[in-house]
Image (tube, rainbow, N blue to C red; front, side, top):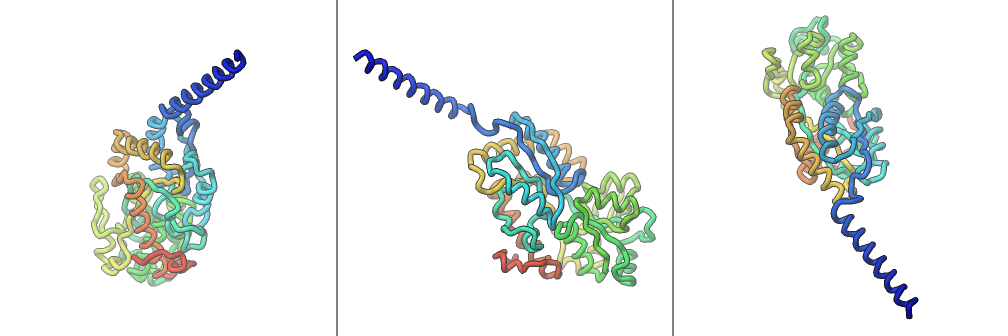
Length: 340
């Protein structure tokens, strides 16, 4: 009888311990995140995607209570190396992939076997693209540059981040809308491409105003034209729209920029909810707001289903634009990407 009482008491004690453990878990103990998080940016250090992620992740780490370590995993068409790295990691929220709208073309470039809808996305913001040249280039207007590229096709070296990136698409659109013919040189990100322009390795550079602003102000790059319908006032320097000279650009442009990050869509919802809350706090912070204003980024803050809709539209638009421009390796229809 005594043995039975002892056994029952032990069972009750164990039940109480399990119940208490469950209460502790439900109160937040042992919940995500329990350790540091890694954000793998698919483009090079110093570029727009890299800088935006570093600023936002620094704020998110405060909300999450752990470090968010940002690394760079570059290479492959449309950032496919970094995307593969991020998607191949455990789908547990401890590996985030820093990316941009340019990654939606990886499928039609033959470098990614999935549609972009395998991701759950977060949008930090974006900045319009500008066409600039090296300071000593003999071109002072977009017309002078384009006419030179027409007169000597494939002779003027033009750089941007990798093949299939938004900057590459904008360069293709400039060619098709104006009749120019540049020799495209791809780089692992905007920063390496801009460095190549400053050293004279290339003559033309297509990246965003946010990425070029300091270089333009410092006289290291000479802006010729915006790839949006409006001109842009950069601290008193008015950069005209290339649309003013070449109306046919409206057939292909503008193409919107959406810089942010993503986790695989099948990451547990409770984990994504924690990231949503941290992201919301980050985007509302004074540090991120000041960054957007100072660096010419239009901040977004969309995440989850709302952001996924934006990227779905971008995938459709970019994939079919590449196909129409003759720069896609895979027919978007074969990937079931709808026409815009």
